[in-house]
Image (tube, rainbow, N blue to C red; front, side, top):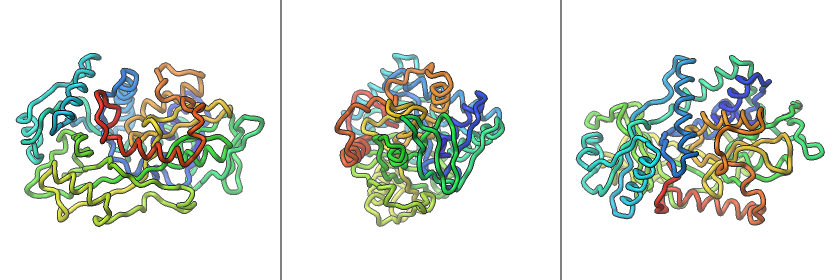
Length: 408
């Protein structure tokens, strides 16, 4: 396996549980890529039964991890979706109707109820809101640590500071990888390298239409006059393009901006360390985030004590990950392109990947996330076109108005 973020570690754990011999190669330290920069919001209701089932099952898998490790990973805060205009209110009502059609616990609530739940949030402009009591957030560090601990317990090996230079392919079949002066040989290779996934695929003479997209969130420090309870509901306000959740007495607020930056992972170089990325408040993306956050949470402005986190997500042209094989290389599996939701999708994705690898098929409906679903699209052979389409998807992730919602 290549890549030790949550997707790779979850897959390694599930494979090890099935008796497979597993070696995970990580270019840096465990979780030093997108996993270490994630907010971890968990909203289970999606636009399809299949996608919703994956996330609901994922919660049960996490509960098992908590029991096995004695660590709290899932913080069940509930979640709210709020709308300040009628077009967004239609989204909220459609979201509730979708939930009720599959007996998912979700209800419309009024602005007075929202104000009681979150007294520090602006609510007088709300037109509609809905509440799901079973949502919350996963703690990324604790989740990754549980995967790694249980995978190692089952015999998996994790090798850090081991960047893969080449995927060894012979006669259309992956045979192993080369890293530095070493070679590792295996009948199955898994590309779970996040923002590096397209480059890794290219090194194996295939292509994966993913692109690396910048993302930002702020975390306010605890304030004496703002009581952010640890179990305050998470918020999604698609009109303002923001999400939020409690964190250590403060509030995380993140944004899916209209014009996110694109990154060329090759140009960043072999020594690039995502965990060291920094950005100031003067950055246009950060300034836009702070402004949007202040519109919903009036205690936030440019002078509020806060930390700014920036990182890189992996987007796909349709906003869904690639999981499984491509037709051109046997033995090479892909597990990438989670569009900012790798943390919450990883519990079920690890199980899905293990089933595909060991059994040749999965018990889940994965039509929407199969790795080969775009393989025949000629326009995606051009990397510039892929990057443009992925950037458009990222820019519209919260911006576009739809009757059903696939975004966090």
